[in-house]
Length: 324
Image 1 (cartoon, helix red, strand yellow):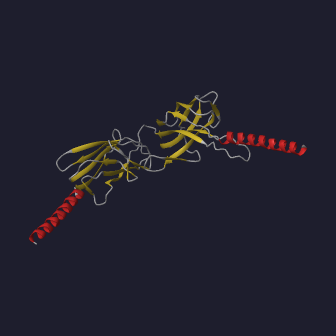
Image 2 (image 1 turned 60 degrees about the vertical axis):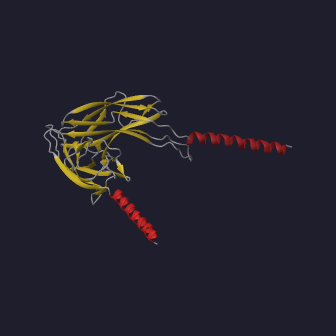
Image 3 (image 1 turned 180 degrees about the horizontal axis):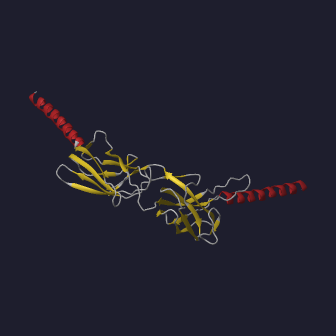
């Protein structure tokens, strides 16, 4: 009887330990809901050496309570689609600080659910700062909490950022050096079926030291004098980088899983010319480019020829049967 009591107590203790372990483990692996926003999401500044400017940012938390850290890092273009790559270390002459009385850069602060924090960012270009562009991101980073020893935490590091594009210039002048890298349809032969969609690829390179933003149109001209104009969507092309230029209206920005600038749809027949003219602000150079393509109802024609051949074969067979 005593052994049975001992066994019962032992089993009961094991059961309690298992419940405690599962409770702790489930609390640890439960995913944290992180939902942050920062405004303004992008900032473009022109500043003289020796001057500073203060910008008011606001970080809001729509998820679970979180501890955030605000910091500045440089970024660079990653591809022609406008994606960026954050660098690991800070560099450049621009100096940043917070004017908040109770906040500092890279010092953690707490943000409850539904709470917000204003960050008064002071941006200064020191005397003698070299003219040119400098690109930074103001990051609000939520680090995962420390988990229990020996138990992995599923709470991932979450980061939200606002890009800051700074042009340092003494007299307000910027260098505008655009170059059209590619303006052509995605077909080496430039021959399409009349019912095909015509994908256009348009890439511009910025060879200057300052950011540029193209404005203009893409014009489609037919062999009967008809014209259709498409507005170029103004997007930043960072210094020493290339950017895919998009135009509207366009039903989609990809074709066969490849990024494109414009997708032409409709019924095309004959010779067509595509041209573009871009400007980059007042007193800036204008760039031109053009290409062409030919469209013919190839599939329809082949279908008609096939039907005619079958019809002739059938007619000849029936004629031959009648003669017999």
